[in-house]
Amino acid sequence: MAKLGLDLTNNKLVGQGADFIAAQGDLVYQISELDLKQKEGSSNIGLVVRCEVIEGRYKGCVTEEYLNIAHSNEDAERISRDTLKTIATVIGHPNPNIINDTDELLNLKPFIGRIVAVKEKVKQQDGSFKFYNKNRIKKFMEFNGEVPAEPTPVNLDNTPPAAPEQQAVPTQQAAPQQPVAQPSNPWG
Image: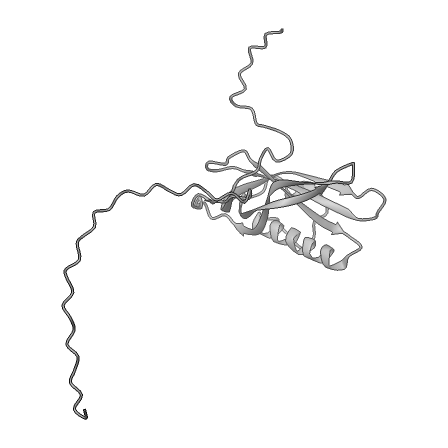
């Protein structure tokens, strides 16, 4: 046995799903890292955009977005390039129509990201599939300095959330109802 004596209070968890936020809503993000990746055996090129939460309860959590900036499927490429232009615009890139280097997207303005929680299907080396909880940024918006409300919790495990405890509210006893007089039928 070896004594470590480490204080890991300020360290983050790492690995698959460690930064999963079981909530949906708006968070303040800053782009922290960008990586170009080429799919093995293809000409498709993706841009991994790592966005770190910089305000609120989830500060330090990272959400990754994968953008197909060069892809054999024209629709996938167009959607990703539209998203990249939107990101560049909301973070204050001087010319979001022309981006020559990923470094141009670092150290600019923070942005609001509307996250959703999803289950992502990932193919394993043995050919089987495993599901992971993951966050996606569905909308990128300019940050005006006002921190958004706390995101709404979600449950992806198909187990019903615990019912919130309700305080007993005194009930008033209803007054006895009087029978309603029926109008007489003048033709009857």
